[in-house]
Length: 164
Image (cartoon, rainbow, N blue to C red; front, side, top):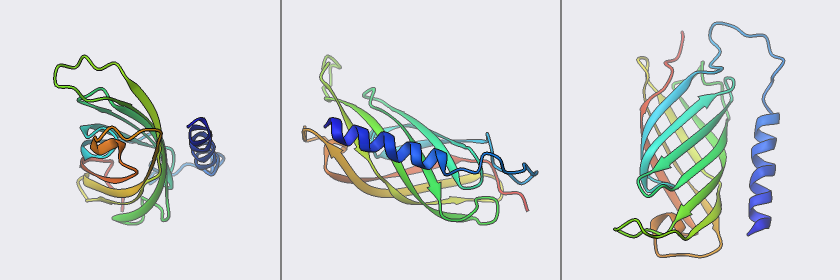
């Protein structure tokens, strides 16, 4: 499991380092602009998700679910977000899962690495969605959706609208 976590940190670091930090800022840059979503399925099962753009091709994201499952990660977009309504992305996320019990007394927790491949659409007014699928490297399957070796997610919310 530690090997999977190390691989996740390497992937997230590579995504963050691939951003062009020295690029000249212009008014159509997405830097620092957050998007907020309601997430169905995915690492949190059901929860909230924030996606903060570092520039037009990369973002960091965070999520928290009703079972106190959480993730932190990064996405790399194949096209510039300010030039297209939709874009495919590749991500890496470090996830923390808690065993689900209806009385919330379960204290058992495990870490996982989720590598989603997805598509994001952002409309003119900011209404947006993301859909992704990918492998979930986890130590033990507890019979929960988020502990399966492969799953996906759907996120619906608002993101910074594209500038024309």
